[in-house]
Amino acid sequence: MEKTVSEQCKLIGEHPEASFFYEWLDSKDEPVTKNKKHRQLTEKEVSREFVIEQISDWIVKHHIDEKRLERLRKKRGEILDKYGFEQYVKKQTLLPTVDKTKKGNATEIILAEYLLETTKLHLIVYRLRYNTNVNQAMKGDDVLLLNRENLFEKVIIGESKFRTTPGKAVIEEVTKEFAQELRLPLSVTFLAQKMSDFGDDDLAEKLEDLNVSLHDGKIPIVSVGFLLSNHNTTSNVNRHLDSKNPNFVFVSLGLENPNELISNSFDMAEEKLKRVNNE
Image (cartoon, one colour):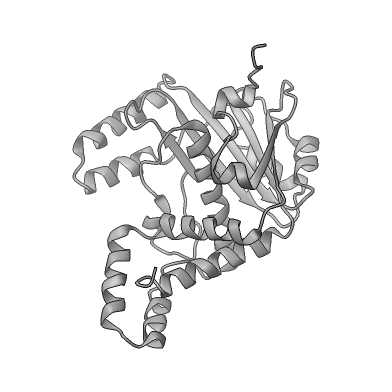
């Protein structure tokens, strides 16, 4: 019997059948209506330490590039005193220390990593590495995914939100830009500039051409809203979600103690930076 493919799967791919997300989360694509395409994610009975370990790795990867990590490893070799090196890392402000920014960034990172798996598309850059103030939210698309080998195939943009309590207001906030019509990505020119900075002028030119084609309505755009909140998230999204955009999917992730998960993940990420030469 042929497997029925949900509308959610057609737009963002199937929930992983292996890997971290399979181990961590169950997935259910809710029945589709004219104004609602919703995928709910819920936590399996797994060790939180297992989850924190992975998210902390992603936090480091999304915020800090390899060259800066290598400079940190070199500095660790120069500063033999453990306390002295920990103070050096602290003063570098490599990761956000503001609670609101931590929550926003972690939610963005989880969405990006999830869609990377389900869509098989690519992040051209890890945008949080280029935030000029690590403690402020970064403007632009939270997530922008492309096929690096064929930029004109499809574009996925994502908007992510963290809330301790998943009320109607945040669901409307996530959907407001996507609800009526396709919203164009905001960050394509940013990517083009970064590629130019890196000396990849060919990719920079293709991204500039992509930006023109997007404005001409020639490229398929899928929009994804994401809400990370508590155990009541799914029911609130089902109750309040309303979008007239046929290419919009809302992904909800309801967790017990989501604040604690993010706080502990950043704590572990900081610890990994302090022992960067002892991995």
